[in-house]
Figure 1 (cartoon, rainbow, N blue to C red):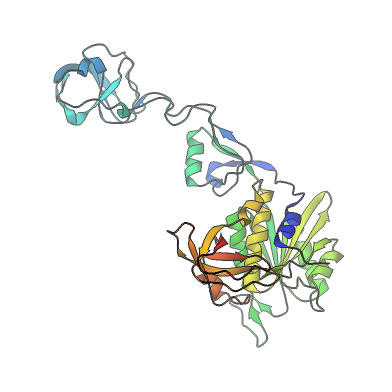
Figure 2: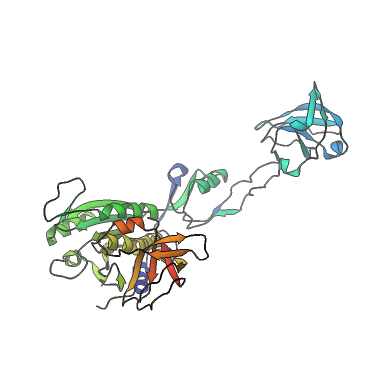
Length: 406
C-alpha cells in the first residue's frame, strides 16, 4: 500500500462522515458547543424606544429655544413605563433603560437641567438622538443572528439569551476514545523502570479533543499483546472515534493493526507522506449500523500531537457539521531565515512567529525538529508547512503557517 499525501489522507478520513445528531441543550451547558441549525431572534431588541441616559423625556419642539421651563408630570424607570402621553410644555423624569413615553422624542440629560418641585428648567444642550435607543436598534424578530456550525462562546451565548432562547439546537459532541499502546509505557506519577518511559501523549490529545468540541476518554495503556489490545478496543465500543497511540506501523512488534482487523476494522491506509507522522493508520469499525472511525497515531510525542492537530481536529469538525478542511489550511507567512530544500515528505516544522505586525507575519523554524522532542513543540507557536520536494527557500520567501492552538 503506497503512502498517501496529506491531502489524500484527509480526503479519505473526512469522506462519508455522518454528522452528529441534534440535541437541545440549556444555555448554561452550551458554551464551546456547536450549533446544529440557524437561530433566529424570537423578539425585537430593544422591544421599545428606551432612554440611554438619566434625565427628562421631552418634546423636541419644546426645547428648540433655551432656557425653557417645563411641567414634570411623572416618572419612568426601567420596567416601569409612564402610561400617559406627553403634551406640549410637559416633561417626564426618566432613567436609563426606561421606555420613552408616547409623545416624547428627545431626552435631556439631567446635567443640563435645574429641578424645582414639579418644574424643570432646561438650561442648555442640544438633545442627542443617541440618547434614545430606538426599538429594534440591536435586532428585530426573525433576524438570523447565529448560524449552523458556529461554536458558542460567552458573547454568542449572551446574544442567544437576549434573542429569547433558554435552550439551543446543538450537535452532539463526538465521543473520542484514546488508547495508548506499548510495554514501555507507565502513567505519570508511577515509578519508571530502567526500560520504560512516561506515557504523556494522551493528555495533550484529551485537551485537543475538548478544544475541538468533542468529549475525550482515556482508556489507559494496552500492552503489546493482541489480546490486551483487543480488550481495550472492545472497551471503546461506544466511541464515535477510536484513537490509538503507537504501533501504527507494520513491524513485528506493531500489533495495533492486526488487533483492530481481528475486531472487524476495514483498513484504509497506514502511511502518509509527512514528517513527523509517517506511520498514520486509518480505518473503519462497524458496530451494527454505526461506523466507528479509527485513527492510529504514531507514538513519538510530537508526531502524535501534530497528526492529532491535522487529522483528529479536522475529523471532529466534520462530525460537528463544520468545514473540516478549513482547520488545516493555514495562512500565509514569510520566512525570517532561509530554509533548505525539503525531501519527499511534507514537513510540518515547529516554528515561532517572530513578528506578527508584518503582512504577512514573519516566522522562523526552530533548530530542533526531532519528532521525539516535546520541548521544541512546547516552545513553538506555529507549524511551517513545507511541501514535498520544496526547493530551498530564502529569507522573506512566502510559506504556509499553521498556528498552534493546542
